[in-house]
Image 1 (cartoon, rainbow, N blue to C red):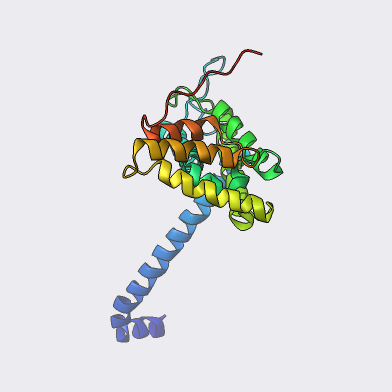
Image 2: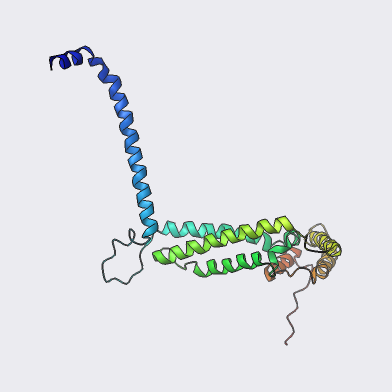
Length: 235
């Protein structure tokens, strides 16, 4: 005992550097514990998606589980971003001519992303402030599927471009692309724009089916240089 006290008396100054070491070790241990706790909580949320958020709902209540509105808004922003990327094609006829697969419903990848879009649109909540845990999970899953399906279709469309068309068909696509550029050019005369628009539609006939939204956008850009679209004749 005397030897211990003697050692402590002789090396009392070690208390200061060692206290710093212990403080650093304690901080690291606390941070590691917090990370373990967060991982456990995340795993629990994944296994029991409605448990934590629904804990405050009394038994017998039929109201949907309240989710933080920012969770819904986050998924909606993801949804809007994929829509924005798709609209960059749908509202740009020239871009669709460059990547025709994006509107070719004979392509399984195109059909897959269009179907995923419909499912995500259908599950988008009307009131983001109150959504059940199950509905939010379904909506998030649908938006994720939409995002992935779109990326796959876009990557393939950019890879193949117009390689599936014959030489003559690619020439027609190239001509149509140039005509569309003239049709939306404010420097061109009304007659030039009208003629370019109509010729572009003829060149694309049988090659690419432009969505209605694309045609509407193109006609708006031509801005009155052409007349109103004719109504479909009754069958």
